[in-house]
Length: 337
Image (cartoon, rainbow, N blue to C red; front, top):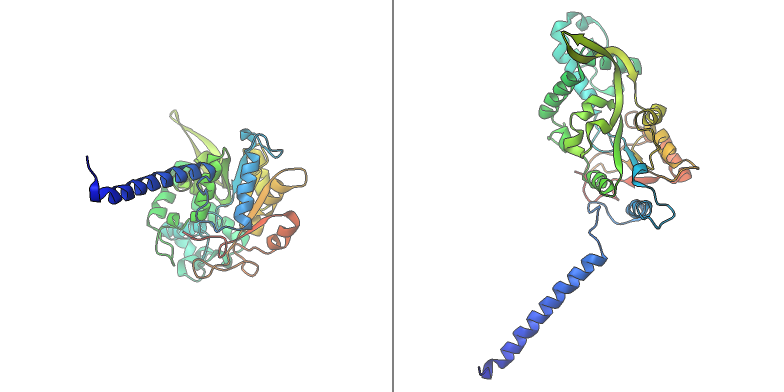
């Protein structure tokens, strides 16, 4: 074959092919050297670096901070940590709607507080109710149901209830960077638990589908249960008595009761999560603690010290002393949802 005048073109095409092959080979080699970013929705900086460094060290058998897989326990708060809690806690919104649904069976509620204020619309936020009133609302809307019945009602409500600002289901108002973090930890052999002040059966309704966390790894507030046998049909029913309100120090007690191990990774967003972070990062224990700081009014909300709901005040003061990472949702996250 005589190339003649086409020889330069042939040479050029040959060089292009060689160049492309070289580029592909280089890219493949680079992918081996630089693994895929496990947290793509997180901006680069000290917070992201601290997370990745901690995970790398605790999963590297040759590193002095290595932790065996069985002891890689991570605990996460839910409201304000994994999903949006503003303008009110989602489990509380569910309870308010339950009161309205149940009201026809209890006409006396029209003249009985706190129910009359809920039905009239006079009070519509958890911030408007005392702790005792909140516990009464919780017990009233949950008692005399089996866990399965309660979860069915929760799922039905979640399927039709929309966030008032974002106009989509609450289960779609979850933080994308947090979903990445949960997945990252699980891929590195961490067993991830949710430790929430919300009712544990309410969160179990969607935890696996939304977070990839099975219901048995959800710890939360709960009523006492009673064993019931009816013609060889066995069930348990929620009693009108608080078993645990899972907030503050109770979170640590419930972690010990339900997990039996101390977490090495703890993540929250409010002062109610302080004991959980302290438990994970105490002086005699290797661990990392993180707090979401809601400081992005454009993409989500901005609140911390002044707000009674989801208040982050003492936590901000203790963060430096205890070495916790304060995660700026405005600066550390590329995306919110």
